[in-house]
Length: 204
Image 1: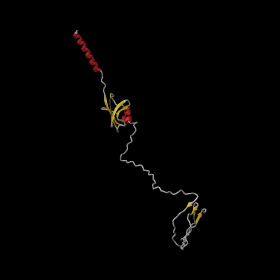
Image 2: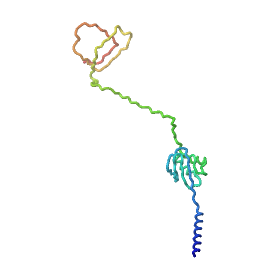
Image 3: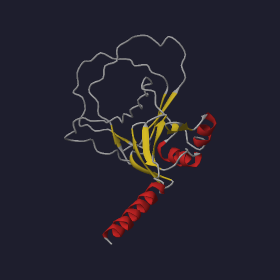
Image 4: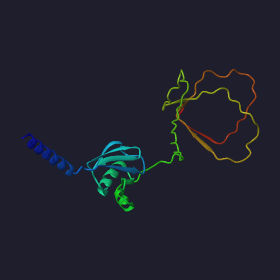
């Protein structure tokens, strides 16, 4: 009886081992995508349901896909930028497939560091500053104008050298301020010759 039990147990073990041996084990492949520039997205990048690990110019992922597919490459390129090579050891996309992969990728705009941007012109707003007069002049009145000057001396003799056009001077009403008459005494006559002057206004 014991011998029969041992035989049955051995047969069960052999059958289980055969079943395990016949069960296929899914292979896994390491895929690598080399980019033309630094990845636009880094870390874990979900591209079409495939989560890649991207850093610098390289993205990697492990999966059961025996051959690389263009749709998966297109999804990755849309997230990280143009791809230079895509696939696993022994199976990579060819040049035509890579062109299809990068067909919808927008070109990158790079700035040349040797080109110096011209500075914007500065707008200078002039400011007028100065001491404020302690006794500002009063605003001119429309009714009268007072003219005060120091002693005026006219130097010169003879007539003007040539013809001239008359000049007309118009002012508001002029008020002359002063008192008394000059003290009698001797003085030398002075002759002043000017262009024709027209004085317009009412006497005070």
